[in-house]
Length: 364
Image (cartoon, rainbow, N blue to C red; front, side, top):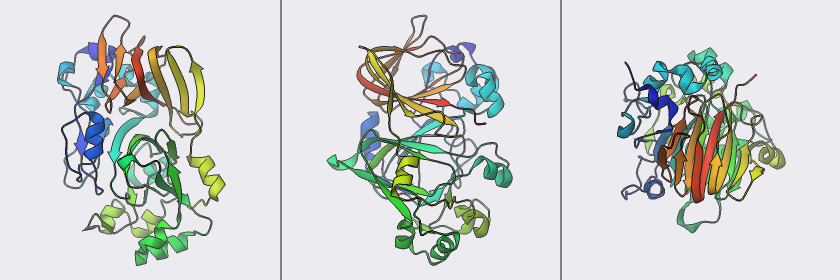
């Protein structure tokens, strides 16, 4: 299949890409994205920029893969990468994760606590599923529902937890005791939370979050009843046995100070001028495969040269992506964009807007 090569020299924007999950939400997500009003439902997650799509029972291969807007051909992102891998990804990132973005982004809106879960490390992804990469992820808290000043997330095992205890509670499905095994971390709008691969975690209710993550959608769940639906072991553990599935959780334990140091990121200002402030939300040595920056715009910010792809989200207000040859692309609040490796000389423009930037990092 042939595509217009000019696509790799410009920022790519994407069509709406809503998927259903076990949890509920979506009303605030639509408001944030400027979409038609909706009531909360299982259509609570938007895949903003993904070449990997989503794993969902009964859905076809390629479900959830991003498609460019009609003005950019309406093409599937994975097929565009297949046609121009190095121009899209950058040569070294194509070697690191062939044919796929190394950093993806989605947004979710919760009315309830999400199911307790973990994701694969690279080692476990290769061993059990033949996949090259696992999944570390990070949540940017974009909004809280109902004017709340504080929300919360759960992450990491408390000091009393052992694999034996977790297995016992899982078998009994003692959900209250299982939730009490995890640290409850308060969050506010603008906070960034890092979840390393393997760490048990779940998002709390009333949060609109932007999730940057590595290229893998396998989720290992620990609750048999989710949203009123009973889930068997095959779906909880993606075909693995209960022993194998529970063995994918990282049983490292943390005290209160240690879990905050590991998961609650402290932003660091990198540059500040009269036109922008650039902050590091997650550094390249923290996320195990990606970093996240945020730029607050009161004018123009020129993206520095980079030999890989970048993933952008307008989290507050709209922005304009301006190319060196004069083309301008509007990035609306709540929407994502991909900057291919071959797209250089790009500037972000805005007045009172904030854009987050995800960059891939090659792990040692």
